Image 1 (tube, rainbow, N blue to C red):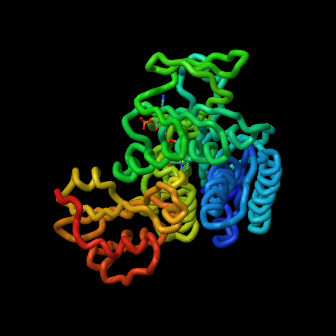
Image 2: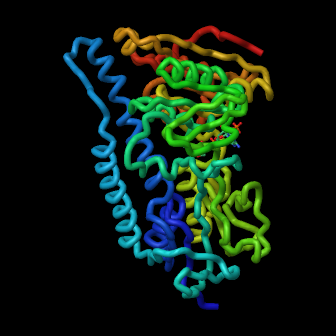
Image 3: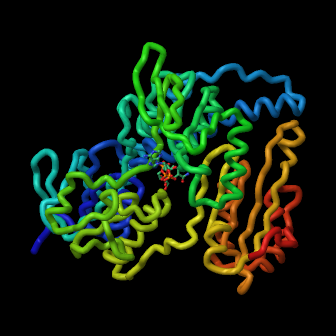
Length: 452
Ligand code: NDP
């Protein structure tokens, strides 16, 4: 049977664009891609990229205070959101165009409209047009969800935060995950009065507890009102702002409330159930290690599969799919020991197992150094950093590395190579220190602080 395309990709985010480009330009496939919103997906348009630029913007206030302590005659004044926002919009336009140009150069046909699946090889476009493809790749990502509490529609999510006309004076952020913690730090740095509710005992559940405890301490020191074991029970619009009643019975009014309470796969109305594809938790598309669904011609990569919801993972899954299908080399992405960073201030960089996770599976040695780093200590700032290795007692292999520090994201990218290679503690120790740095502690910790 002749198809219109070799590959039809639904979704123009990190995973979809990478797969479409590689299949077309490197494997010579006839490829089309449909995107209903802006090209670039969550990462470029309302995620990693604008978020990181906001992290940069928000870090200057603290830097200026420290600069003054170092002897600079400096006064930062107020943050001008419209100035930043104007530049941000231009930058996102530039990146979106870069994505479009990349696809055009690769020869991918782009449909700027919603696409749904009619059958195993047929795609229906919003315009009513129907096309066929030998393979279909779903890369539709996810979207933020709000809890079902009265007045939830008064709150924004990470989708809207980049489009505010002006910065609120006060904000309540609900949630304790990546997005909640990152935006608590960003908005606090920009001069917004931040309160954060997290329903559990410690933010960033699932990460190394010693690391997350330090981050929550640092966030509180910076002025974030972090309320653990608390949640929003209801929201009500009043003349003074949004009145929030919390689950402990307290009330407070905020200019803005942001729910950062998780994201869910974007599969609504795609037509998957009619194909007999049973969706997983929250609507995730179940796939095998080659990102193939139960319908052999249909594949899915990225957040829509809810494996590890990170941009570089979606890109690798997309590339592996192209290797497997269009180059005939069965390739799967290894989801083990994926390094990641939470861009709080200070950042958390992490790879491998947390102390708690490792201790639950085998006997371990924990090497950990918490100390005041030279740069901020000289400026009189009371902040700490953490360098931590979790080591298998039996094999001496480093099972996890956790860093809390400015630039921890940069550091963990490099430490991640050693951990992924299976380096032992002795091999870390055999590496000479770079002095004076914070990360030198990773190769100079001689005695475990704990063993199990
Ligand atoms: P997360 O899953 O990381 O966090 C969701 C948070 O919301 C958790 O603290 C969760 O609590 C809480 N929560 C869930 N439901 C409710 C509820 N009904 N009421 C109150 N709190 C609730 O999701 P995010 O939205 O922060 O981020 C989504 C994903 O995006 C991340 O998991 C990550 O994969 C990716 N991401 C990565 C970034 C990076 O690489 N730097 C940055 C941003 C996002 P509990 O822990 O109790 O379940």
